[in-house]
Amino acid sequence: MSIPFWCVFISALLIFIAKAPVAKAMAKEGGGRYDNHHPRAQQARLTGFGARALAAHLNSIEAFPLFAAGVLMAHTTQTYGFLIDALAITFVVSRVLYLLLYWWDLHWQRSLVWVVGLVCSLLLMLSPAL
Image 1: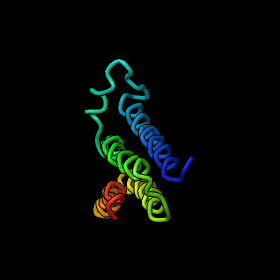
Image 2 (image 1 turned 45 degrees about the vertical axis):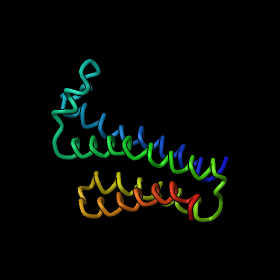
Image 3 (image 1 turned 90 degrees about the vertical axis):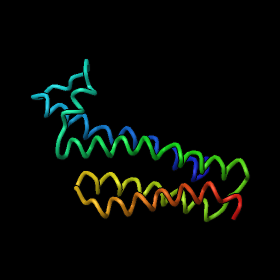
């Protein structure tokens, strides 16, 4: 499996890794109980770290399709090489940093790495034309 495909796999895992702090915050909000009957209602009540963790998780879901599409566009046009690998790895690193910065409430740094990830996805999509 190629490096960009491994990066797609890791990015998919990051969606679920980002859910763990949300579940922990939900349990704390619910007095030690995760409400599996009404998880969305419980998530809506989260504040502070829990709300940031939920937003980071949701953004991970939102960022994934664009990145996966970029990798697939590069792959189907047989656009390979160092640039494609570097863009895919940079995307994954930016998403890990994004989660950490969101959890730590470092807002402008988070926005900066979000832009890095977005640019990587867009460049992957444009790579056949480069």
